[in-house]
Image (cartoon, rainbow, N blue to C red):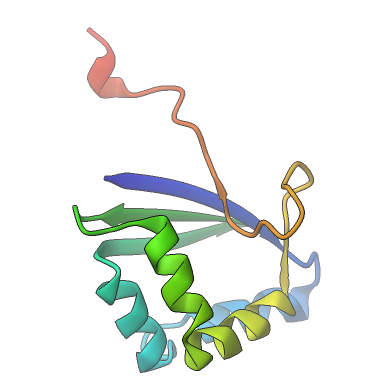
Length: 114
């Protein structure tokens, strides 16, 4: 299943540079990559335009957001990573309190067009 999620970064060149450096090839802590893969996330890409981030995530049948959230809450490495991200990430203006990445609704698919 494909998920498309959005969040903003602080509108600050240094914050954006830090975020990109933390996500550069080979920079992600191994424990974070292992946590993502253990949740049956089969692919994940993050794109940036200005300070807006878009995550495209593909998941397998074993993926459950509630199970992933509980595992993340119990994992000190994930909690440290999330605290680091909180320093530069900003919720979208319409996000509920304590929400981070917001699910985007698909409104168009070329596959559904004649």
